[in-house]
Image (cartoon, rainbow, N blue to C red; front, side, top):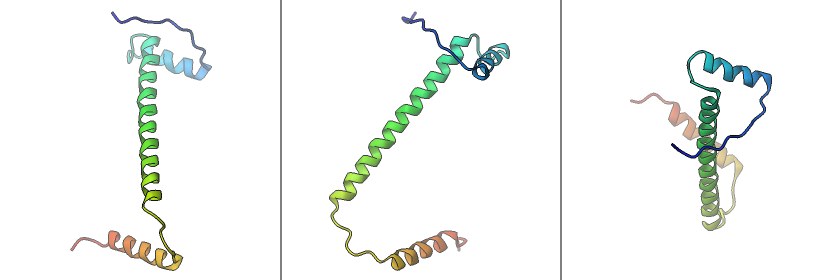
Length: 93
């Protein structure tokens, strides 16, 4: 059996009720299981967010290292964006 550390947490009445309901419905065997499952989801979400941040940083650095963009014309940018949108919205032939 894995080493387990027992800790105490405080929940709002709404959250405590949700935990109790999950156990009473048979979805989980204990409130500890509910909390462990929630923490595993939180850990996955946190890992994904960290990966996204690293990817944004990599893309940012790539953009900076690519050099200056030159003179930008907002009318040209809008025209190109509209053309791309129209092309995407056309039904396939």
